[in-house]
Length: 318
Image 1 (spheres, helix red, strand yellow):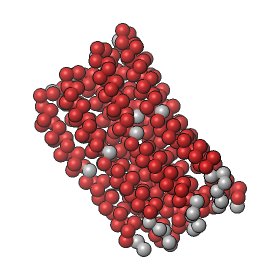
Image 2 (cartoon, one colour):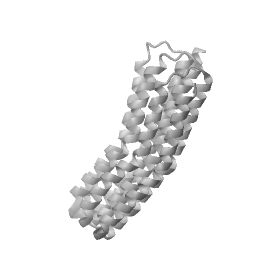
Image 3 (cartoon, one colour):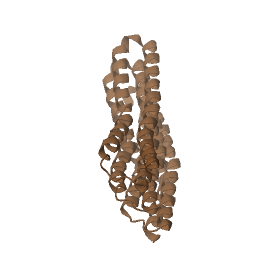
């Protein structure tokens, strides 16, 4: 039995690190490729492009840093813990949550950096503002993996006291909710961030309008991940006294995780389309932004439905 416990324990550690490392490596490779292409287009701007690529890669690395931090915490912070099968199963919630979010963020956080490199090639004298804009876009994209990191800390603290299969499944459900819930919003944020950086390269005079629109839109796009975080946190707090309650919590996790997937991507596409049009015709900013925000608000209702049903599953199953 102890061998199984240790195997599950080490699987959790390896999954968290490996999934994020694979995605971050691929993302950084794409950033480097875009930087080379941008320098080929505009050799005179190679210094700005190189700086953009390095800063962009540094932020892409965030997911891997958070994941390896959790791996060290699990590896060295549980050496004296009384490990049992329920403890090891509970830790799988950490593996699921951070593996899914870390993999998604590692890939999509490279998208704004890739567009920023090419934007500087088109607007070499506007490099500093493009870099600042890229950093803001990438920082916003890190929200899902930060939420997953917070949930992982809570799961670790509660895993020590898990004494039944129901309690273990509850913690797995918490990781599943935040992990699945991270994917759609992360993709949406990546799509929008890529288009926003590209739009500045198309028309630098639209920078101020695009900057304001970006702050509003990224806040809306992140709404589904906030829902997933809320459900994940509530699952941890509620006591799973029976197996039926644990199954209900797993159902709630799937509900909010899958229910935020479509809205997250859809919100990113709506905002990206509006951002592109704002760059082409800044004079229509007021109309385009209002229509986009209205469309995003309507699209967000699908995630709200998933949130309501998930919370009902958690609170009314006893």
